[in-house]
Amino acid sequence: MVLRNRPDAAAKARQVSRWFVRQLAPPVDDRSAQDVDLVVTELVTNAVRHARGTTCVLSLDARPDAVEVTVLDSDPEPPRPRAPDFSGRLGGFGWLMIRRLARKVTVVLVPNGKAICALVPR
Image (cartoon, rainbow, N blue to C red; front, side):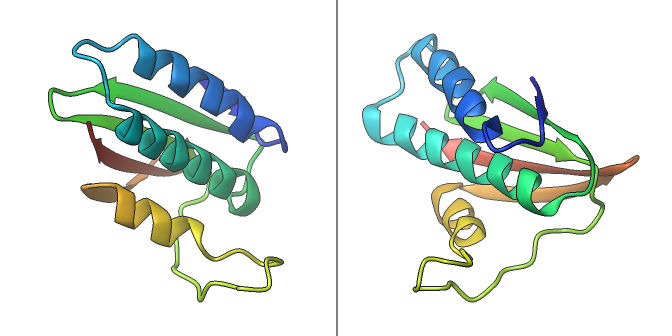
């Protein structure tokens, strides 16, 4: 799914990921579905906030033991962990959350940007 880098991108991505997860057999338990939802939200939000360019691409793939969430954007810079801002103004929680919820996270440079792939256990 191609998403324009606009404030509503994460909400649109969540709609798609929720539909995708509901279609899987065997079903994904509620906790895992929430984890997929959070990872999708954070990866797309980070692409909109930090990547150069006007779009990002969300891809979802079902594996027997995980849901693979991939977001491509046009910024070749890998994510950098930041100290969380507990005042709520500057964020800094997303990348930490992604790393905690996913079994494996990889960042691959691709022509004109990067792909971040997170394997979320199901």
